[in-house]
Figure 1: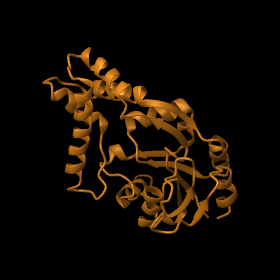
Figure 2: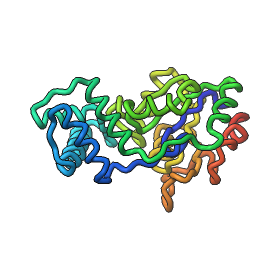
Figure 3: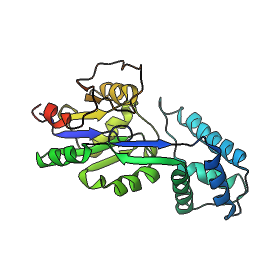
Figure 4: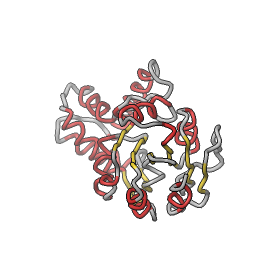
Length: 241
């Protein structure tokens, strides 16, 4: 019987669309940075952002097969490139401004809240393990009213590595003293979620949502599959397992 239910966030619990590549996003961010004496054109700012991300990935690849970016550090570098200093608090604020500018919509998938309530009522422990930026996702989950359902949360940006690296799964189970055999991972992505969980020797429930990549199959077969994206199937399928 599964005691611990571990969830991905974006594409699984939450439906989101962002536009990080649109010119208007970078123009708004450029205007914000100008208040701090950090002078870029919108194009220069976009190039600096993605260049810093690429540099972090390159450096992280020396330690991990799937390194992760920390956007707070990216924005600190963006300040440093113009001989300015940004505290962690300021860099976090700017990163969150960027997220606000680039988000088109953010919403909880139908059935998620009721399912989380049902699992908790059944005495299950709920966790989040997600490829996500803490400075983005922590306030977004709070805004959506989801944070209170979880007993523990781990984001890739704090760990330096991302799914499908099994290291991320191991760190969650170690931190919260979980027995992998009593855990099931639930996510929508065939590569990061299904392959990641199976690489970590953890059972997985693949729920196909509107955000699931089309035409991509996992390398390893999931233990369970919910092909219609119906979150209500999770307790029906897994509470007796």
